Length: 333
Length: 261
Ligand SMILES: Nc1ncnc2c1ncn2[C@@H]1O[C@H](COP(=O)(O)OP(=O)(O)OP(=O)(O)O)[C@@H](O)[C@H]1O
Ligand SMILES: [Mg+2]
Image 1 (tube, each protein chain N blue to C red):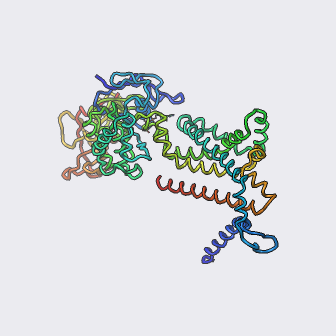
Image 2: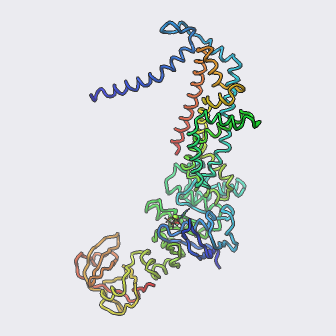
Image 3: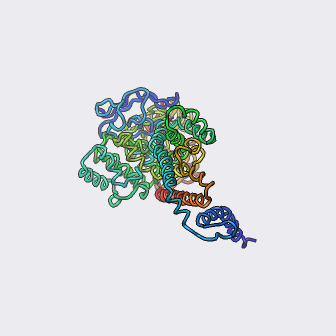
């Protein structure tokens, strides 16, 4: 039973179609991510969901009601903008209380709810600060608190973390996920960072040029990319033509046009049921606990990754044989 | 050479200041002097002219009329122009180019031509010329109100703020009142003060349109020039003090705004 459904939504700006007949559905309490490169229409879709932009065609349903023609202010949606859009003339508390005041909730109740929310997002002590006196991460948390204190039916997040540095970002991702699960809010996150999408989502929709390229759980998407676009967009997949694979492995069975191979699927140990790549190590890169290197087999270059271990040192220029499970060679459509 | 530079700078600045201030200083002294014809310095100092000026009910009335005209036009534009500019900038940015064209027009039209046009158009319409003047002022300060309001709206990213407020359940009217207005107020205030002080010194329109029937300070001053230079000087000094106070308020507001942003 889906809680939010997006049916046949299309949108064009000045004659240019940016969303092509999209169909998506989210379950209650689900954390969904819209992932895609810049300009693919993620924000537009989110704004249509929020009622800030109207679609040319299609229907939006939330909790069984058709809200396609309902105004943004009546949709009971929470939204966090990339620019935060905090009200500069209001303190942290006043910002968080704004939505509750609009609902004409008694001020005693507002006080309690705001206090609980301030504690939840870890802003205790900052209640009377103005947005300009807060760091980026703190402002972000105020924006989050402001949008969830009203207990919206759906929470929309448009690249809420993209302006923050990696450390804070990782922390906030975790917090976001925890809070979302605690309150069980149906959440739609927009991002173009595939790691972020993988880390927090129950379900990912990958968008490309206004169309859905693939959808599934992070695991499904990562292990079974369905197209060249998804394979290239997710992680550092090797995308090889069938003929290239034939040359690299000296086997003839690759009839498909394109194949995807995860770099960590290569192994230096012999395995049953695997293809053999013999060749030379080109470039070695240390990425923390991972060693990534280019490997050339019969002139075909692939990227391979290993957990970094001192006993399995990879030397530039060394000859090496790599094994790859047959099931890890994924044919692409 | 290098060593002399600061001195040289001070000298030029001093010379420019002197050049600007001498007429003012002259006016100031003249407004306080009993007689100043044949001597280098005035023959004696007195408050007489100020006393005469402020006991002249014609002056006080003229002052009141000037205030009514300038304050009226400024408030009118606050009430009508600010919401209008807000709507255009936020909801119909495509219309902005029409406002910009209008602004160019207000600059391109010499006051005399506007005055003649207005007299031709309205003198037989039954509409009081005072109202026509306020209307002309209202249009005349459009550039200042537009610039100030639009820049403030851009600064606070009014579009996002409106969207955020609406999603939180606020109507557009409430969002404008509670979120937008408090944030653009300093900028709008500066524009209003600027508009007011420009209108308060405007002479061409006010003289041609309503000079005889609705005597303002400007017209009063013009008449006094032929009667007593001392009183005219006193008026100029009063005017100067008023404008200085307004300017310093503008500077203050602008500064405190920079600190908070
Ligand atoms: N108001 C608008 N007027 C005209 N074109 C627009 C408007 N909003 C978006 N577009 C166009 O629609 C397309 C999708 O924009 P959108 O903002 O949805 O992309 P996005 O996926 O959110 O990208 P990013 O990751 O860069 O934020 C872009 O080509 C953009 O130029
Ligand atoms: Mg976007």
